[in-house]
Length: 136
Image 1 (tube, rainbow, N blue to C red):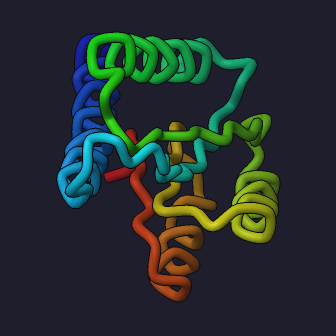
Image 2: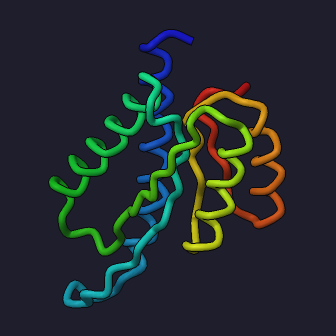
Image 3: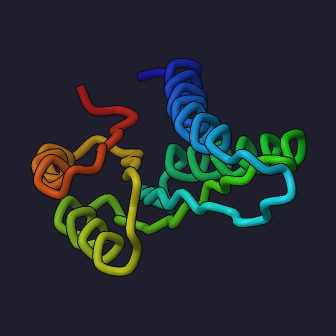
C-alpha cells in the first residue's frame, strides 16, 4: 500500500472517531456544564517503523488541530498509544493491557500482522470496535 493511500486511511479513521465524538457533545443541554467526557481510544503500532511514526504523528496532529479549532467541545478524545514492536503476540498483549487499564471505546491497529485477526475476535467479544488501518 503506498503512502498516499495510508495517509487517506489515517485521515478516514481520525474523521470517523471525531464523528463519534461530535454527537456525544450535542447531548449537553447547558453551555455552563463543564463536565468533560473522555473518549478513550487505544492505538497499537510499531513505533520503530516509518508507518508507525507517520500514523502516530498524523493522529496527534489531527487531534491537536481539531481541539484548537473546537475548544467548546465537551468531549475529549484521549489516545493511549502502545508499541507492538511489529510482533503479533506483543500486539495482542498490548491490547489486553489497554483493555485492563482503560475503559476503551475503540482500538486502532496501525499494522498488518497475523495478530490483527485474533484481535478482531477479541474486540467482538468485549464489544468494542477494532479499526485496522491496513488489514484487508
